[in-house]
Every structure is written in C-alpha cells, then in structure tokens.
Length: 192
Image (cartoon, rainbow, N blue to C red; front, side):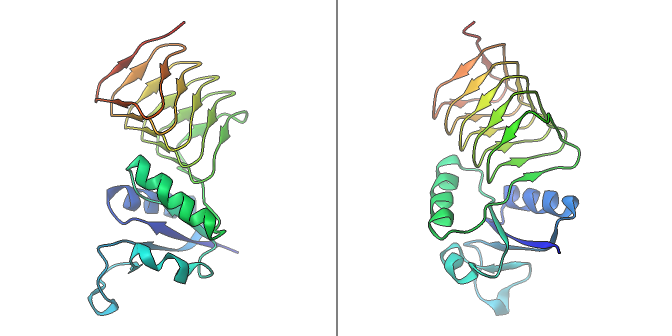
C-alpha cells in the first residue's frame, strides 16, 4: 500500500522535495501546507491549507516532511510535528548513493547525485543538496543544510544548524561549529 505525504512549505525547496517523493514511487498523494494558501476557491495547486492547519491534517497523511530551507524555521516546525506524534519521512533521491553503513536521520532529504560514504552519520532534518559529498566517517548534525555541490572530505564534523552554501568544500577532518554560516565557495579548513 502506498503512503501519502504532507510537505510543510511549497516554495522552491518544498517543490524539490515533492519531485523526490514522486521519483521514489512510494507516495500515492503529495500535498502542501503553505502560508500562501488563501481559500479553497482560490486554490490552483495541491496546497491544501496554511501551516496553522497542521493539526487538522494529522490523521490524513501517513508521513510529513518539512520543505523549508531556513534551518531555524525547520527546527521549530519539527518540534510542532513531533509534539503531535506525526511520522516524519526521510527522502532519498533514486540517483543518490548512500553507503550501507551510513546512518540518515528522520526528516532528512538527500537530493540527486549525492554520495554519502561509509560510517557517516547525518542527523535529523538535514538538507543534503544536489551533487554534494559527505565522505567516510563524517558527521552532519541536526538541521544542517549543505548547499548544491558541497564537498566534505572524510571525518568532517558539521555542527547543528550549520549552513554551508553552494560550491563549498572541506578538507579532511574539517570542523564547522554549530550555527555557522559559510558563503558560497567557502573552504573549511582541516583541524587535523
């Protein structure tokens, strides 16, 4: 039996998540809650309500995922979802490669072309964007966001809610402190 999915947020990130969900073939229905929703009469897509309507949809969906790129907003929304005992989905694009020994947390989205190496741990509600790499023995903490094409060498340690923007890279054993933000093309230095 196929599952259905409710995505919180219908912006660019939420729409990308919907595509991943469709490509997995696991979901028979994908709908959104988004604050741009007005009324059913004005609805022109599968936005079925505003974020404040979350509790009304608690039993209508087998899974929920947060489609907001902002780390702090994602963390707040996850707390609301878990407080209502809703089932967080974890999505992996069919073209991503995840080592069998890697661990991926709940609510995390892994996009196209990603490679996650052996013994790597990726926390809850992390965004691993297209063509990123997290090499062996890496750790990416909860609510972090790896932009498009981020390359992390082995044993990198990425703290909670870190935002590493597109095209950045990290040498072996690099560390990013919690809540740090790295501009596009940044080079994170190794501490080894």
